[in-house]
Length: 300
Ligand SMILES: *Cc1c(COP(=O)(O)O)cnc(C)c1O
Image (cartoon, rainbow, N blue to C red):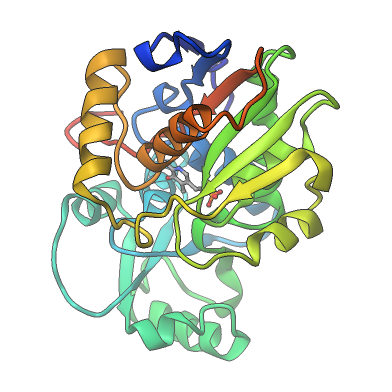
């Protein structure tokens, strides 16, 4: 499936008036109500690989508010691929994300946080397959049927899809900035920057300082990739009243909705870095709006 090109929207903010800096937002969030932003980019080649394999079911992983599982469930419905989501944490609380997964036909299994940590271990996967065969005999009939997409779509196929984001970014952009969880999107963007461009990631998790090395291992050019670790506001999905207020004011003044988990931290960080004169005069900065805001009542 091919999406239309994402639009680049210029934004004017009072705080930018004295700085000779141009700011724009790449609206990947508008591409699809659920397969939005970077999550579709990360699924695209995974789904292609699945279709080229002899596997019958996609199995993936995430927390109970995982944007990645939302995208997997939507893709499962659209392309009629049986999907199983392995959820972190055994507590049984329904939320709109989980209702959406069910509505799309995704089957789910909740595992303890301790077990969830073993998700990359062969022997644990064998146990999971056995459980799926038992619980979902209508879709799972053989342990060889399962095609694994790692949490967050953070494999090589995921990165390959993210390399295509730069197709929608004009060549005169000097800095392209993105909120980073696993760093896969940043790696893909950085790997396809031109010589005059820099990719900047804002880490949304606490203590992910290993990320820079892993980005370089994945093929991000070291001299054109940077990542900031001081804007996580306490960790994943943690926020503050200051960040909440920023998101609200930014959304009101630009008409671009942002939220505190990913894009809010990104936009806050870049405004702060502009104020601290991190960017040279004449910079043309593009912020990737990677989605993450859903209206679960939308049909697709
Ligand atoms: C998943 C997600 C990210 C993080 O992407 P990574 O490739 O894991 O770094 C950023 N923004 C939004 C809205 C997301 O859902």
